[in-house]
Figure 1 (cartoon, rainbow, N blue to C red):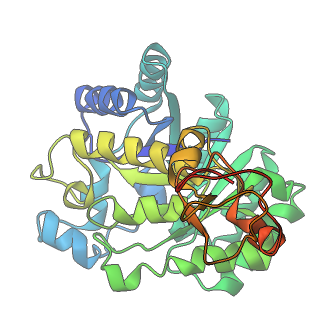
Figure 2: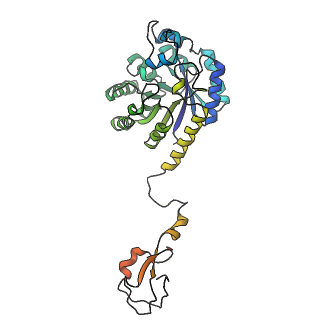
Figure 3: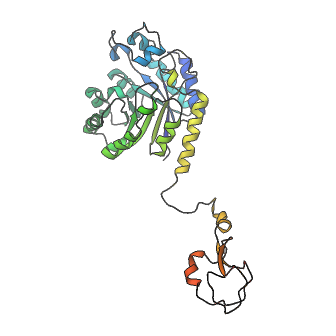
Length: 331
């Protein structure tokens, strides 16, 4: 099964449906499997006095509250419908992360089959129960979480009747951009070992190296933010990939998938032609007469590998030559 690649448009549409459609175009052209937005009602998400995250203060108007920042990034139900239809036209899956109960209900009414739980909701019991009760596939992000908190969230989801097989847990770090020393990619494997779930990685680092490493380590889902231009105004643009970078990431992931192969160690079809050229055979190191005793004084291992394998060396040594051999002749 191929790695499921999510191009995270998030709120990088800046409240514009035209920008949102351009992000869908880029995601589709990149070869990503899905493009994901964020669904919320500011009134249900943050209080009007809530402060911005430190990284948001650096990338948006510092005098603006978190409420004011996200209010202008809301997408209403009609916009969702239009974007879903556009994704169908562009042959890419539409996903969105709900941040409140009304948004969960909206996405359910719109027919979404996969629900992404953001890192900030992993300790929100009512939210987890509501998503779990839908009985759909769930992608659970775990930024800022301990292993115990991940386990608690899984227990709640499974307690609603969900099958663990329908849950994929994404290791994540919520700093934008994430410093390399804080990625802790091995924690993704710890999640898999502890809970026996499918794993993935939601990335906020600069570049694509960590995403590729995550795939090599067994990630089944990769989520990465997408922007049209990193210099655009907004909270997440600077920690996002531009169109060509997204394409490069998708190509690299698909290459790594092909390179991983199977667990069977055997010659590949492409290298079988090299076996006769690169391997060696037992040959005469000098003229050998019929009946002469074969020894390490008159035998040597040389290319090509079309004759008797040097692995038979011990069986040949001490026997008599059955014919005359010229130097370099295969035994």
